[in-house]
Amino acid sequence: MWKECGVTFDPILFKVFVNAIGAYPIGSLVELDNQEMGIVCENAQNPKHLDRPKVLTINPDGGNGRSINLSERDERTGGFKRSIVRCLDPKKYHIALQERFL
Picture 1 (cartoon, rainbow, N blue to C red):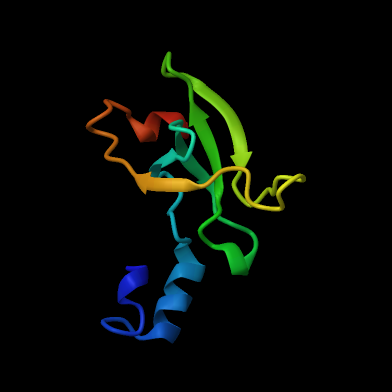
Picture 2 (cartoon, rainbow, N blue to C red):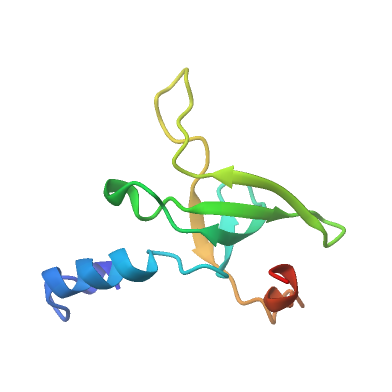
């Protein structure tokens, strides 16, 4: 949708929409740049970085891992520590997202 902003979507309405639900809605299954999978558990707090929510990683055994704030920066480089690479289909990985939030 980001690529269509200004072409297919009105930029102002798109910004309002993203501010309301986040770039990655809560409950989205995502892959991080270190190949970990995670579930978006909280929207980004900084309006300049709406694509940087909090993510709860999934351990290889299927359990919940640690919480990662994707807006945190690396002290050495100044860049972000982790980033989302893509959204994943939870059915493909046999992950019941609704069970993770109960």
